[in-house]
Length: 182
Figure 1 (cartoon, rainbow, N blue to C red):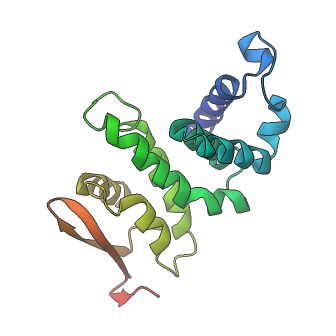
Figure 2 (cartoon, one colour):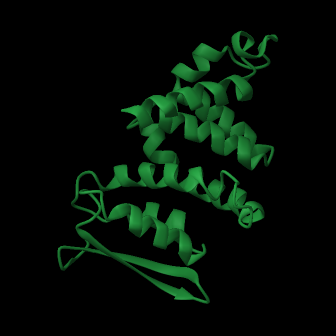
């Protein structure tokens, strides 16, 4: 509960900065009115798509993260995880050696929590989402996810393994309770 409230406060802060909300920044809004954009995942997705078109990877990631924070479980939330994971990778690479970078500290945990939602039904291994986040990434990220997963009942029954080359993840598989994942 505390984490959810913290995420909502963080989302409002990011939105104020990103959307140029007059009430937060004491300046006229430079894009869609804040409340309307925040209330509608379709508008946030459009803003994220526009940022993608401009190759502003961090801004696009922020818009898609806002969709997850403010509209969890929505169609856009589920659809955009692979895109957000790809954008995370693009943003992580230039900051990977910075110990205090959000790309090495808080964003991995945020994505792990988002990814955990794809394990809710417990029936299918979320291959597309796992591939989107972990393929071609340093195996340390997967190792951190596996540590995170140990205390999550929806993920812990899965035996997740990876094939790596020089520490880079090339393939991920998941088996639930000793049987191959569907």
